[in-house]
Amino acid sequence: MTSRVNLLVTAAALYLFSGLTFAEPLDELDVAHGSRIGARPAAPNTPGAILDSARVTSARPNIVFILADDLGFSDLASYGSEIKTPVLDQLAASGVRFSNFHTAANCAPSRAMMLTGVSNHLAGVPTIPEMVPAAHRATNEHLGTLSDRVVTIASLLEASGYHTYLSGKWHLGSDPHQRPYSRGFEQSLALMESGADNWEHKTYIPIYDDATWTENGEPIRRPSGVYSSSYLVDRMISFIDSELGDSAPFFAYLPFQAVHIPVQAPEEYTAPYEETYLTGWHEIRAARHESAVDLGIVPQGAARREMNSTSDWDALTPAEQQYEAKRMAVYAGMVSAMDAEIGRLQNFLAERGELANTLFIFTSDNGAEASGAPKQDTAGNRWSLSRQGYSIDESTLGTQGSFNTISPSFASAAASPLAEYKFHAGEGGMRVPLIISGPMVQAKDEITHAFAWATDIAATILSAAGVSHPNKRFAGRPILPMTGKNLLPLLADHEARIYEEDEFVGYELAGNRALFKGDFKLHQSQPPLGDGQWRLYNIATDPGETNDLAELEPERFRTMLRDYERFTEQNNVLPLPEGYSRTRTLIGYGIKTRFGDTILALVLTASLLALMVFITRLARANHP
Figure 1 (cartoon, one colour):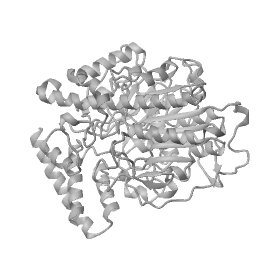
Figure 2 (cartoon, helix red, strand yellow; figure 1 turned 90 degrees about the vertical axis):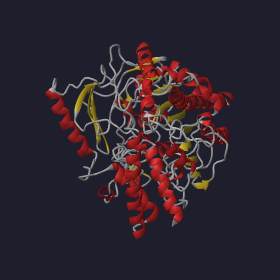
Figure 3 (cartoon, helix red, strand yellow; figure 1 turned 30 degrees about the vertical axis):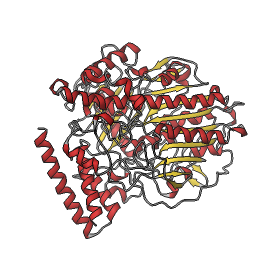
């Protein structure tokens, strides 16, 4: 019992250390459920279903889908960043950059849409499991894990003759039938939770007992001392190399841990940025905005909205500025290290003669993460993290045994010139880089400003492979049809559009809402960054969402509100229960999962809440 109490005490301290108040919880927790291994389903023998022979070429392309985690809109050099990303820059130069690609504003919903082409609500992932209200769970269709009513592109590609591999974060369910090995991936190395340490087999927050890694469905322990991006690429290379001899094409899904917390990177990647961020977040945000305009990523004259979560750099002491700059230097190093590992994968493919026939798709699951503490180096944080074996000493930030985040202030730079962050419905949480490069690209080194949505990734990958979605049945079971659109036409004509002016795409995540239609966006973000009011923006000319058009265009505003209601009906979006709190739901789910419905759980819950209130008051007293 003592160990459980200690675990929850530490969880409370870390929860608050991470800058999360009752209004803004850690938005990406996923608790693993058991370790039983499920049997791999046989490939379906569905008549005429998978392979679309009319579109198959003599050499179907290999497809590498690379997913960054929590990467900000302007975190790549080709999108305006000061961070060195030469490999991704080269992909951009030989491919097409998307300036108007959107995802859900947190992890699992985006991944569900990208891998199925179906709305995250219909796919069973309205949000992460811990934030699903109990009333929604009763439907058994809104559990925060991938539903059996959808089929993954991995399953479809495998059935059509592709080898299918995954190396990286899964976060779509950990029961045996939900693991990658049971959802179409022939070989897989998968992290089940929302994140983990980047250097060793270790959870990054004490709400988890441990990190859960599986290989082909079997639990494993990842090696210590190997950096995550290197480890994931090592395993992906091994998977691909093991079956190259049979001439079948492959689909490689590489979802990195970078740049999810804990923000860690090898010293050789951090060192070049030691002095870069001493100018502060205001200067970096402004410089990235200017670069994005110069590159043609955002239009001339687009304004940026400053946020009340951004602190005054000049109010910091020189020592505090030095520490904050180091936090961001490690973040930059983490991006650069990921870029280098992508380059290593490309070099391997080139050596094997496969690079020229490989289509690369690179994007992020959501925008910049802003849950790091505004002031990380405090006595309370040192105490709580030391209980996990973590240090926050400036000299070792990023290395093995260190814990690091970036603050909301530097997250505003990562999102530049957009507003808001991960979890919220502002463009900074939903608009992310997307680069497509490879043999099908005709409009090289171009930028498309066409609106695109997360579900379009699935449709694009299937189209590139010459595979049709079976629509309503797969492997003898009913499934939902795919709604994503094929982006390949934009690789030939970057000025084309794939969504008609009257088509809309809706979005909802724990009360944060949006609707896209033409160049316009209806947007409602909840506190602390939003005020819960609907607003209307032209995001083609105003991607920073600075000019609310609701009163100037009342008819458009009313029409889009009606469209949003249609979206909720068509996608089974359930209303939140009255008084719903993301924080209370998350805490309650975690404790119930760990301890069950016992008196002990009730006592621990009360103790935990009391402790959190105490630490919150203490933190506010120290940082008014």
